[in-house]
Length: 467
Image (cartoon, rainbow, N blue to C red):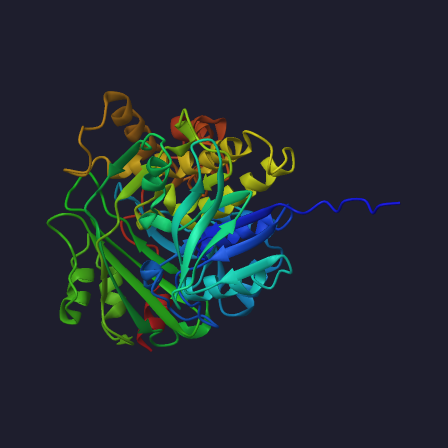
């Protein structure tokens, strides 16, 4: 009697081993054998690498992303905290000034927690959790050259290793998570498909970051995150953040839009911080010891590619992460979108076979939902900077922006309204949450406590940065 044929698991290839690619690889191992193709040689621990130049700047994961990470990779958040990261209470562990120049009170009445650490640490812990999987093969020092297949179906990807070895990797599903520099638009054109529609909103933001040794007695892990956000209504927009991270360090990132950009000169870094609408960041840095030079980044535009709207698309190919949409980093939503997008992929594949016709389109549409949420939050602010977009904001966009400003002002004084605001900002709930009773009742009927006239940082906290 002949043996029964053995059913082979599908094969998936993920291009890119940064956060979005590894999150995707983690969920795909439930359904396929996965090969991760990465252009760089990955570091062994929390070290910088060429393919993630933005890692030097301040990063955080909003509470919606923390929830997604815990579901996606159980134990990961705890591991980050054990290695020096923090779960920061919003707004209790923060001193934060909103874009409309309102200081938030440090309410403790919400469940929201941001995960705060260096990007190098987060990426290292993600690699430890994902790449140890039995069904994952990593090909480092390997570049993706082109897709294999036709306009109906992608059947693999052609790659080139650092030693000059070129080969074809067959795949039932190829996932492009190669970031802002993705070549997927041209790859699809090469297969005979139309070019994907793109949109860009560029506030002209330049980032400058410097790492400091945590000054005084602030290295106890309890010092608040300091955030002074830029105001689009008063260009050039200037802002900054102090992010206390592992290793008794502060990552300090300053930003400015066209006409108000920070520069790479170390001697101008603290003066720039002192020139912000509130000088609190510069005041805290006066006696701090820098641990390196200033790193400057100018590639901060919001750029979105609408793959989910393609009328013709090949089966077997999906684009995720920054390759779909990259956001102005000031809003901190990229990591949250990557984690939520991976969960969306998992949920679709639990209902539909990976190799079934139309699955790739369903995956692309599902992953677009968190993208759309983050895009609206970012563009809703950045579109108001001069020269940010080809056309000025429409009347409806201006009215919505005014309402959001009022919602922020209400949340700054009401813990109930703040909870609703953070539900949206953290990407846990849709924007309609801003029109709920939790927001409207405080907005219309109080409490009428006055706005704070300065940053809610205590004298003891200021003294800790000096002593």
